[in-house]
Structure formats: structure tokens, C-alpha cells
View (cartoon, helix red, strand yellow):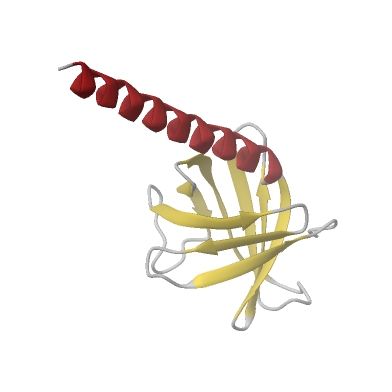
Length: 135
């Protein structure tokens, strides 16, 4: 009986340490993501601003020359269990395939000073780079 009790205590301790490590990593990633990130996706270029109040704004341009804004998105973001959650609160003008209330969950591979690598829900990996001047 003492052995079972001891194993239970050890299991709880290990789980608690792992949970605390994830929370600490999530907090660090939440601080590192704040700022502007640029990404080329096919022929379009997007800039996302992750704000420290848990909101984001994104501008999707026709190209990396940023001559024409195709649409903008605003929404909420948060990080939990090594995943980036973002939910659309507004899109202007409307764009096929994206609606208010849509939620995306991306697995975080890396968020550093200069680079963010995520894996989307379909398993596609993509990389964003920190940008100084988003406009």
C-alpha cells in the first residue's frame, strides 16, 4: 500500500512539473510574439501585429511590395499548451473562406526574436519573420 501511495505522489509531482514547464513556455512565447510579423504566402504578403492586450491586426497585400491591401483582419489571440489560438472578430472587406468567429489553432514550433515557425491544422509548416515597418 505504501508503494502505491509513493508511486501516486511521484506521478503527481512529475505531472505538476511538466504542467508548470508548459505554462512557463506559453508565457514566454506570449511575450515573444508581441510585435509585427511578415509572411509571404504564394503571391500575397501579410503582416500581422500581435498586440500585448491579446488582440491582433493583419493586413493582406497583393505582393511583398505592399502596393494594395486586399483585406484586413482583426481578432483575438492567446497561447495555450504550445499552440497559438486566434479568432477573427472582423474582416474588411469580406473575403471568401474567412468569416467573423472563425478560429485557427497552430502548433508553435518556434518563436524567437526574429522568426516564428508554426504548423497549421492541416500539418503545413510556415515561417514568419519579424518586421520593423509593417506599412
